[in-house]
Figure 1 (cartoon, rainbow, N blue to C red):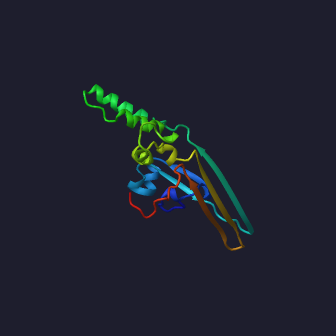
Figure 2: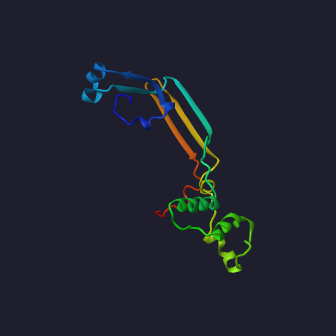
Figure 3: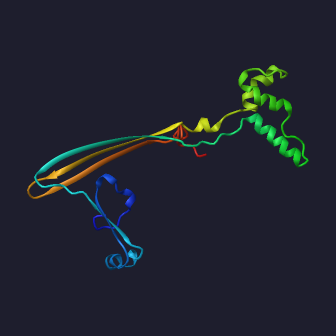
Length: 181
């Protein structure tokens, strides 16, 4: 970048004026063994003499998940585990009462269970769709750039300030700050 070896991921597309690709002998002649596979030369924007310009850009991007896997509920999972264990000749892992509790937990009290067990059902038989609890339906990104370009009769300047905010698909991503999972 501008004649210096630098990480390209730190270069914003807004500050690039031109890109050149050197292959084979030209890259080796300029950069030695580091240019064996070629080199990418990036020239950044420069200021203009006798001018003054301020440019502000704002990009707003909304992303949607194209596919999100659908998982089964707790009762269907429990029935599948019991079926698989049956094929292997093992005893069932979940009783019919537990499967019944998993299936009807969202509808209040489960017939046939005592009040003490009914109160504890959400803790003993959780039926949580972790995909819906963890991810948002869409992600939002905002990108702000402001450029200052100009110069006098003996000098020129170019400065750019960029800010990017990204609310990805993970809901409450910073909820456990300071807690090591």
